Length: 528
Image (cartoon, rainbow, N blue to C red; front, side, top):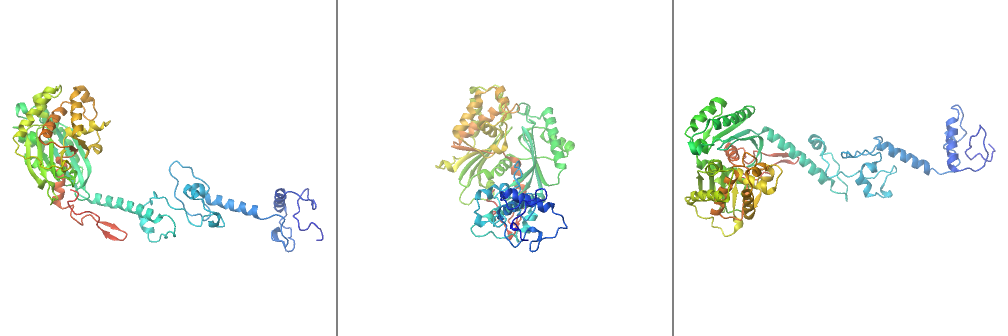
């Protein structure tokens, strides 16, 4: 006990003390640890120095290195999932998992928290902010934790705003899914002179619906009709085969209401009624032949959402395979929820892309034959008693075209690698762009038109006949712009059936939010 080196940590070398010679701190600390590890468990501690740690005399070295090592070990344990580290957002796809909390959250590291705002273990005093793109894993967890979520401290970023937006997105998704699953199904079938089309949809917001199933096939039912006045056996066989596919689709779904129509080919053919009787016997589908006025009104109903609020006058045309419907629409101060109520004049020309191409030839079209087709259609329009649009401002008047002709022009103008309805429906074309596209198609031969992905071999002999009808309409009603509609009779049928059943009445589609019930939908008719 009278040893002068009693206050120093003895180092062990061969079981003897080295005395009071000074050595570097790091080796002495290591040797002290080794001595404690090698000391026998039965060795009695010296008085006032239990376990060799809390002696009455101070150690020669400080505790800073040991304290830093402890904090580093705790950080590593927290990074591996231990300790009481706050939960963090999962890393993005492809990002390696980091062991350090600062590396796992780059946004937290970039803020550079000063040391006076850190706790003793090196953690920030506030938890890491959630990214605005954070989406709760499920709507159930979001709604259950909404009431107990702590309020962000003053001066922090708008974390609650980001969480509210995320909750609203999940709520909207659940609301849409619930109502779409509960909404009834409606079906519309249009058997035209050139195409057979089916559409199955569910109502969503006022004036809108979601397409559940669709079918379209070129059948050319009116092939040879202009010359013989009858539907050919080959054309009827093609149409019946397509209608069998439609019948199978309708039988596989619980359809609340449907309407199946036939247009110009069955209207004009001598054996049109016999053909529909065969369709009912072989497919079970009962089609009705609609008149020209109904066809024009359905075309307007199907395209009503594309008529802007600023429009005062519109000429809507539907270039079909055997006929072309034209409706003149004038909108006053009191706009009706149904745009078809604003029709002032309408006509149905007994000419379409199939009948016109058969009379003048559709494969090899020269500028002279094209001009002859335009003159024939202009002669038909001359008998249509309709005043001009009468508006001086060009932005108040425009054309709306709904047919394969105008959608083909839009696809060629956009230079699409393949036809895409989402890119075409609703696009605007100026008068100069329409003229340029027609001149471009007229300069192509049949093989070049057939090779274009937006035309194809099925329409290569019909597209120029449709351009001739369009040119005659543009000469009669000059307009600075034209809007393209990839929609028509089927959409009009669905809109009318859903409106008649009252599925879009106010209050029918309501959302249930956290703060109670609210109805964000606009009044019926504003989107129709």
